[in-house]
Image (cartoon, rainbow, N blue to C red):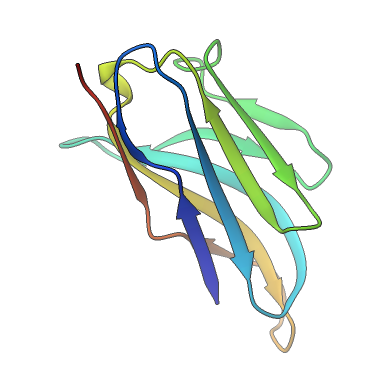
Length: 120
């Protein structure tokens, strides 16, 4: 079972970054996929989610700047982050409801997190 997130790093205010996350293994189905973030000293919060049918939800705090998309053929989810601000600094985690062959149904999995630092 693997859920790998990529694309974090150091950015300046106003920059853009694109996070990627892909599920691997013997996957029978992928349902909801999402991105969460956790800033230092704060609780983990939902940034955006997308259903298997493509319906998206984006947090109000980033709605004008972030967007989520997915590639069902690759079992991947992406987070496009534009006009980054210092308050976007956090560890970003991908989350997915996956159904692995040989198991009894869907369950939630977390990626390892990727750090995004926005600083001038």
